[in-house]
Length: 196
Image 1 (spheres, rainbow, N blue to C red):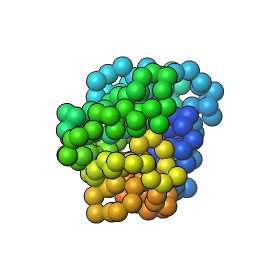
Image 2 (cartoon, one colour):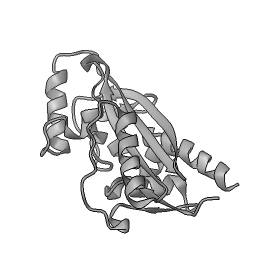
Image 3 (cartoon, rainbow, N blue to C red):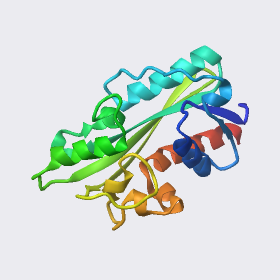
Image 4 (cartoon, rainbow, N blue to C red):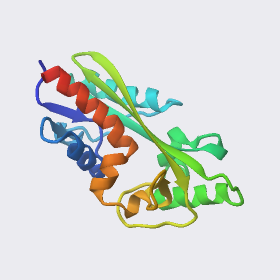
């Protein structure tokens, strides 16, 4: 039996809110700030899986609290699936989302294939046992930024079967279909099985 609090190894308020909405009120999510941790967690591996596990292990080993961490990447087919694991730092360590988007636009200039996918990997550690959950959504990169919601690359990514960017969608629609929601739904189902 596990407690009904879980540490989500993030201080990103957008992600925390998004994930809490998906999980609902079965579990209360604690951010890193909630447990008094404000340092940077290393993320120096080459895959989303390794980075997510590294973050979860770091918090679990330091605080001995059940926790999970995620790593998400935008993977663009014609760029050999880059930026991938470097999505947040694509334009450089101290750049922001706008810089990342502008760099991606420049890399895609003149390229007809704009197929891409968002992929999230969630690493969960409960009582010392490790579990991985993956969510993926395919789509394409458009040529301009549209929409004011969301964050990161949301204004330039249109998921397959839709005609709006993630940034144009309501949070309800995005949460119903996004890569993170798919991974978190798998996590949520697994957590339900533990407390059933």
